[in-house]
Image 1: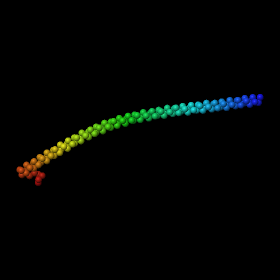
Image 2: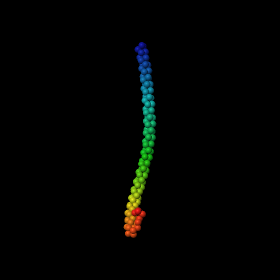
Image 3: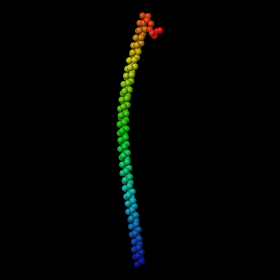
Image 4: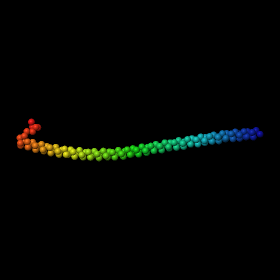
Length: 125
């Protein structure tokens, strides 16, 4: 009978330890599931942040592209105005040079006329 009691006691102990082992595995499995869920939550949160950053980046990129496009349009306008002003200044310089030449010719004619008629000019005094 001692052998039966020992066998029953060993069986009860083995069932107890098996139950403890199974309970530990369930607990470990539950912990792993919780950790996996936390990782999934963190992944979803990170994905949302990345999406938000990408949206802000795309918005800023479009804004910069629009400002750059407007800058080049303004630059083209300024260059066009500069060219127009340069042409106008050259035209005025040409007219001024022609008028100076005409004035020099007229002064020379007046001086020659004055010499012929013996009239003294104020600049000769």
